[in-house]
Image (cartoon, rainbow, N blue to C red; front, top):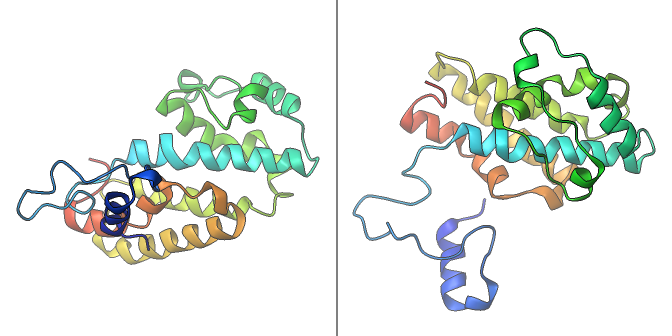
Amino acid sequence: MIDRDDLVDKIANDPNIIPLKGVIGPSPLRELIGFHATTSLPRDLMHDFIEGICPVIIISLLKQASALRIITYIRIQERMENFQYGKFDSSNQPPPLLVKHLQKDHMVATAAQKLCFFKLFPIIFNDVVDLLPSFIVYKVLREILDLLLLYPFRKKWLRVLGELCETFYETMLSHFPDKITTKAHFIREYKYMINDFGPAVR
């Protein structure tokens, strides 16, 4: 696991490598007694998952589908434009992924729209997902997200959450190693953060 303190030391010793894994320098809060910048703050489910790693995985899967000639970027856009959202999802209907968004690895949507798209992804692209060797990454991430969104969260689920988070990280290393961002590292800490600060959803 990457140690933030080691990254800060590397940056302090060689300012030419800024930023490194998302770290740009020491935290202004580091002088506080009993406070650590990465372990003393609760995580943010919306930014870490819904706006963080979920869109990365969706775009990576769709780009892999295009690379394998399963579906083109234009067909992805058309499928999203033509999908009939249900009564409960229509208020959070995401805008279609345009070709330029896929080329730039960027999803334009609100957090609610991204969550809606993430949950409906296997339905919208039902004929595509089974042909993707990396779909396991989505499945594990979906299990993690479903568990984290449960309220109340039971402490006895922490072990399962920890195992899922480690499995997710391993599948990311296998299928999308170039997409491991700071948010992907944060996911491995959720078991400890929930243990220390309580459920991710209140």
